[in-house]
Image (cartoon, rainbow, N blue to C red; front, side, top):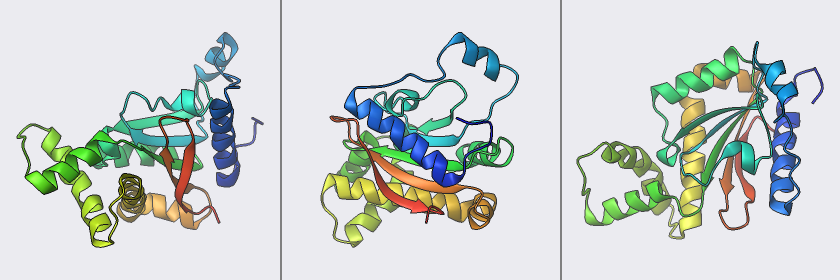
Length: 205
């Protein structure tokens, strides 16, 4: 990367090129050495915010072949977004000047599967898992209303819903997108082959 901060489109290309290397089995493992560690110790300038599902198979720096200081990572089960998530994203966009926000979902998402089961059989838990299910429910209901029945289609709808939620709830993020300073992309990760597929974008032309 050059010293000049990347544009949203350049940041998106940088992220996707890393994923292509990962899929091909030719990772470069950039920015993972002692030199980079020393460079980033005083301050950070991540080129992307990665808001993803907490699934153990979605290790962001690995699947996008990046290193220290590259990604500002926020993760929750089912990429459900509360105030803490929105605050973290706004911090990265406004203070750290990250030009890209990515919502990363994936196939075989347990949170989506649990929500579908709950809507069919009723909520079977009083634990905090219930809160995750309730936050995923609007996405699943919207998918059902649109006649979507395949798992991947429902997961794509949940990714789109999360992107819309971030932009709708964060005036700061919406203004950054309108000004061309930041973009938001929704990606769906395929566990078997490692490919991150584009589902939706805001501010990327």
